[in-house]
Length: 145
Image 1 (cartoon, helix red, strand yellow):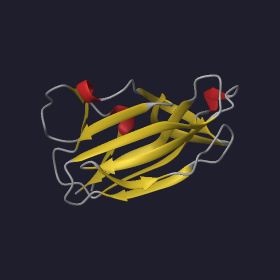
Image 2 (cartoon, one colour):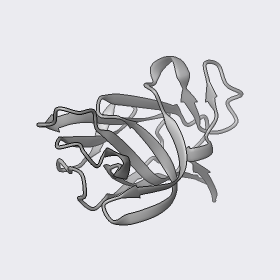
Image 3 (tube, one colour):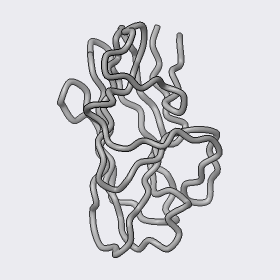
Image 4 (cartoon, one colour):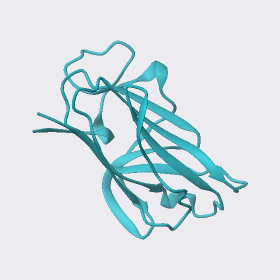
């Protein structure tokens, strides 16, 4: 099984279509990172986005699942807002989080992708907050046979 880490996934408007790729023309700003923190836990890799974002990924092959830990990034320590995470595949929502805020533990995400062509990761502001909130999809991996 091939594991495609979102922290190193290629970005492309057209792509080479050999594996998962972020659609640059249909995605918000994405910060690919190593060593990010959510709650009181450090994660090896992942992506960080703004509190209003959508990241679309063309799978370009048969894939089995998407897994991650979703939560408010540790760099948002002065933020008093909360966000909601959602995972879509082929425009159908397959998973949605509660509304975590800063310091809350990351939510476990595991979504089957068999038969799907696209994956979309959405973060929306859920409540409160006067400052921008950074949201992270930690240890985010697409697994494909």
